[in-house]
Length: 347
Image (cartoon, rainbow, N blue to C red; front, side):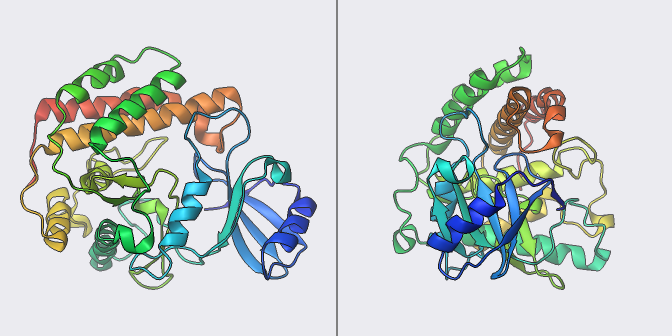
């Protein structure tokens, strides 16, 4: 993840942090990470050390989006748990400092992988990294919500019903053209909603390879990052979200996938293997209705990408790649339609 052009008032920010963040000492330099599409993220290098700053984008934002205060709350709650996260230092809810809310956390010096094939690693080591991804996801879903103070972190009731409604509204609010697949999904998903089984856990909401920082030398996650979409919800939402990776194409302007990749030959688990491993970890039996969960997440991802594209048109996007996103919304929605038409169950 390479830092890009700085757009913060470094002198003003340094003065603020010296007053409000214990142990911080300036001056500082701030460099924006070029990757990532949502909350602009900066590496802060100061006399007192290296940090990471996450801020809301400037400009008009969709309601409930870019909730850096929720990110700060959840990583604060997870300190000392089985879920590896950065150390939170300070949350600023004063727009006058840099123009929007932000928080500062520790800089975790590790490895981020962007290609799910893991070409940087020997084939014999790749499954261990997937196993670690699987282990940490299960740990997130096993968090004792009462013990960490997150029992009120999400609304009660059917998660998929609420989320389908939310992302349908978000999509409509950021719609720039008529995409038939998205219109179809906004009808199909409510009509094919699984019965609420009462499962509630902390979910990350964007659990994927490039939101995990690994130890530099071994298959150990040292921090799960980008908790913007975290909430209380159904754990299968996270699992099926990550499993989209097995179906997305190898090359696209968005998230790289494993489509058309020979998983066993590349030392990678199959989707069924990964799901079975997760279910064994959490004592879950056969998952019914797997196509719904995948279709829901393809729809949700398409709605998120549409929001990124709309912000690019409005001049508020975090990444230069955001202008490319409009073309892939119908592609992602098409994957949801394909999953529905195939009707393939897992296990």
